[in-house]
Length: 415
Ligand code: ATP
Image 1 (spheres, helix red, strand yellow):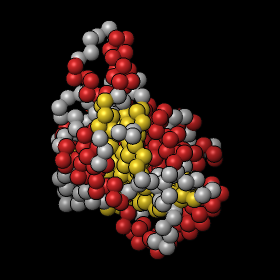
Image 2: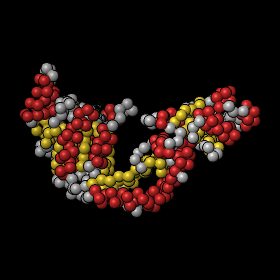
Image 3: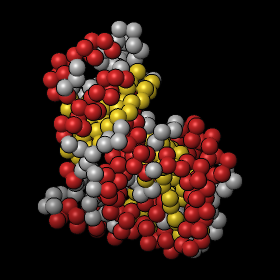
Image 4: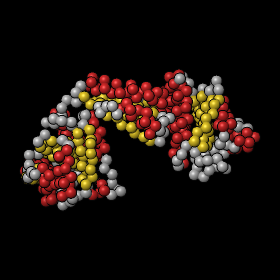
């Protein structure tokens, strides 16, 4: 049925979705399911409960995109305008279907409740549409094929929409689509910002429209997703591998996972493989580093423990740091980062120890700027420190400090 590129647009209907209190989550879920079928979502729209506005939106989507999915506004009340608006956009009639009415009546009978007159509105369907059963609600969905295009009308509540889509839309879609296979590669990268990463790899991925490359960024964690769609799985795999290999060469050991694993899991994997152990000594991260490391199931195989040493007294008491050293250099200093790592390693008898000391702000510490952090890494061979400077708020600085510490050890173990 669909001849060209099987792209989709999603229209979420509901005035509540235009307020700060309700989020359109349906479209995210649908996008994920569509992508698995080789369908890209090329546009999304949120429209309030306004028939003419919705009809105009659907009309214009129909001129450019072959698959349109409209969610919500199928209820029985006056403000549920989806059926009428889409009929208007498709220039089709609305017709009463006795079989749908019987099904709705049957549902009320099973719930032992009288069916309100207004529920009959849900038995009206767009002429030529196929009704999609809704075992979890009263409103049936509608499936319409129209001149090489597909329009789906799905109920708004996620617990009604999801089973309807998987049980009734996916098989129909698959049958309507050209043979398509998807192959994906996902790199997670540390130690480089989004814009530097993009500058580095865009000369490669810009040469290809297939696979599609997406760069997703969060502080300290950039992800590169490649997705190829081809007529065969073999072709799609070959294409993502071709581009993926070039991206890998450019990013080198900054790539810490290829399977979606977070940094702490990648680090844990390396430690377990080598039969080595880790401990931590933290100041400004306040336990965040230990928290991240232990968020991985099975981390007790390699993580021995940590010291949360916030004040100088506790640094001295728990890690054995010389009080004179603390007085001379202050807690946020290279010598203290070194002593913290060495102290933690010695006390836990771990193979490695990481330490973090810094100013997370918002106030600076006696002339030391906010974001100034010293990291320490102790091993049997050496104790080293690194000075790093992060910009951002307290939360971001603490998070980047924990990430940078873990990534330092990870890269050491990769060598
Ligand atoms: P009903 O038959 O239950 O009235 P409907 O198709 O008319 O279904 P709406 O009335 O538009 O659906 O939405 C019902 C509820 O579903 C909303 O209050 C909201 O909680 C949820 N919902 C609607 N649209 C979305 C969306 N895009 N993402 C997440 N939730 C949604």
